[in-house]
Image 1 (cartoon, rainbow, N blue to C red):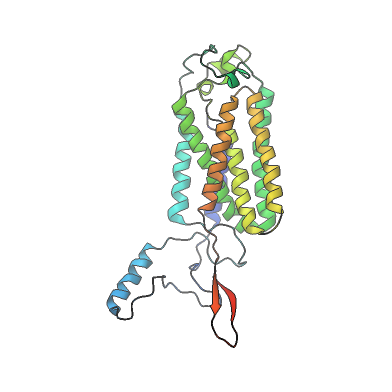
Image 2: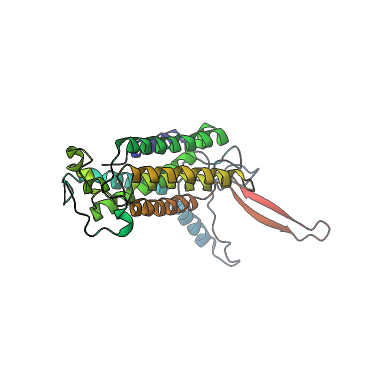
Length: 313
């Protein structure tokens, strides 16, 4: 079964991409008119003009296509999106996330499994089942995603929030995709298969054999860590990102505990999900550059020596 949060993330991503209209190149210096000239390494003094022109044409063809460029506020948004990178990530992640739908056969030991082979830690929760805890974990995950959207909207306004929500969505979708691959490959029975507490229809379902690793947990930690990277860029030097990270990790941990209490995952399942989700949340967010480039400029004039900053927006 595909994680119930995946359609929401996919919808959020698609809405953000559709709302983002291309604008002038992000390579335009501050205070300068828009230009399509690509950046190339400074040519040698004796470089033939024809070769320099050819290099510029090659660089121009190799440029990525920004989805949202030249932000009005130089500190917003937190991430730069590119059509050649982000659209393939969303498309591939969606396919992998939906891969769970291909599984139709029950777990190999359904409708009742023996605890033989379980490690000592996972034996502690084998046989557990609670539909109430399962429902609670869904609402906790939905609430976490909604809170992330509200925070970005409050920080940046609608368009920039949609832009940065794409990256949070990509991180979450990537976590779902990895979880789907792992669960299909492992084919591990869920904890509720180790007793008859769960309804027979639940124990005989294809979903009953998708325990390792927890997609709910992976998604929750991906949301929190990718949001933290965004907030750290939006509020450098502030305690706000750390507070958000602390509270978010607490909620994500609650999602993991709820999945264990529901009997849908073992402790090792949610531990793996937390590691994968946190790693992908940081990774996906970090590889997205800021649309603002700031570099130091040194003034060597002895009458007015100093250090300044210049940037491209």
